[in-house]
Amino acid sequence: METFLEVICKSLGKTSRFAAGTKAGFAVSLINRKLDVGAPFVLHIEAVKDGEEPISFGPDAVLVDYGNGWKLQTFTVLDYGVRQAEHFQQIPKQSSDGSRPAKAATNTGISFLYMAKILVAFVLLFVLGASFTLALENLPRLILFINSFM
Image 1 (cartoon, helix red, strand yellow):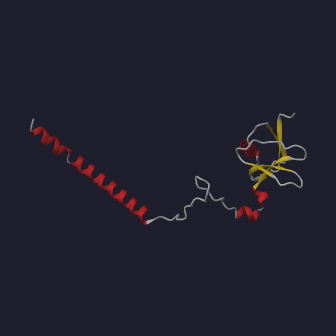
Image 2 (cartoon, rainbow, N blue to C red; image 1 turned 180 degrees about the vertical axis):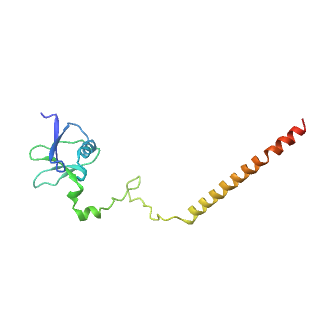
């Protein structure tokens, strides 16, 4: 019985070995650290077999050897194809109960309310600065006034 799994890395051109029970996300991060500059990053690991649908491992999935004919290999951005990688769309986020897609923030512009809050903050900052300046300018008079009663 093997106590390790072999993952064929197309970007490196060699095979990496991992202990049985290794999570796929950890394996991907180790492989990505070994890549040369300009090499495509590994996105995930797949179990592939000729004539079968590949099995993709998510980041928290434990790597598993499926037996005869199955091999683990990396999947990179280039495997999607250049056009698909450029137009790669985000998967819509689900609400907490998983029933419907959560609303995405569509308004990324600066709103009038945001600008008004910033303007009010500046005005308050200058008013506070002016009040401290006046207090410090009149401090000697205040000290003389207090000393005159003693």
